[in-house]
Image (tube, rainbow, N blue to C red; front, side, top):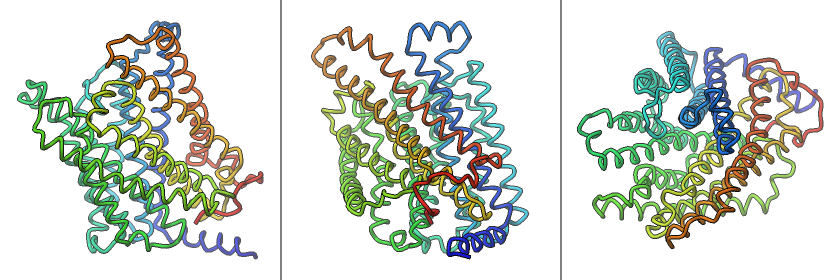
Length: 480
């Protein structure tokens, strides 16, 4: 028996020793995350086709309205990120927690049922045209009740397992702990508009909506960044970085930004200048993170660790490049004169999409791929398609499509901003070509993401034909 077979045998033994309820919890939330992403992709593709006038007319005749597609797309995109982060947290529970007790098991079951009710209810109501009109919270607030109750149960289980000795655990646990509590605060704040005093004052309503939306993004960023560090620890089998001062320093800078960087969306609103200055100064501290990311990218390229590489490391590589780009644009957008120029254009849309796809999605794709590979390895099997050359081509194709989509939205937004500043209308060629370029880039990105989703769905829901398939791989071992 060779070394790889010995490793597989040991992993299979470890798999048998892990409580089956904990394994099933991890698998359940991975499945939920990928299903949410499938819904996101479907709504996104239909939405981008709506930009073509002739196609939009056909879709309208079929009863498919853009007003329904956008909230479905944004809501389930957020659900994908949160569920993916929760799946990684449960994978960590497999490492550190003992067998699941009856009380924890019941809390978990009720949590899953509540979130399933919320997901089905939100999708059904949005398809029937029941909206709230809020950003990222476009569904009827009645469905926020099962979401919040489920999250409270998750919070209970989280601190019941990890509460003791929390301060001595690695940085990714601290990120998760803050993110879990942060979500509760920001989710409740998202519903401040239900108070008549808030809803009656448009300026207060807008300020609170932008603030709550910014901090909501901050809460799921903490889940994602914690997942990223955890996967890095598992791949390298070294926790030194997760306990380092540098890790905690970057965590602190990121946390500060989570509370304040919504300010670059509200520069144009009447509010105290101190709020704007605090937001601006703290946003500028992102240069620290950017410098670190660029340093890591340079070291990565220098070491040529991408050749050969498995899908997990390829996703992580794309995450680094996207992080550098998004942080650079975040800093530019936080400069008040530039912010005033591009606010309300597709540059903001491009930035938001780039952050969610390039950073959050890529990091979670790496985590989910690693968990699937590791899950099959622990069973003594191989999910070889995740290490194949064709899967690598689909990853690259997806990123190229997203780069084209984000690039075009940025170009279109900048041209719009400059001409708006000069009081000049957009040229006719820009108006006429925008719809087709946007739709083309979206379809390309959607096609390759669909191929990735097809593989993940097959591996998560069934004994897929690609398991143990002997094909040419671009990595000969699991990235542990």
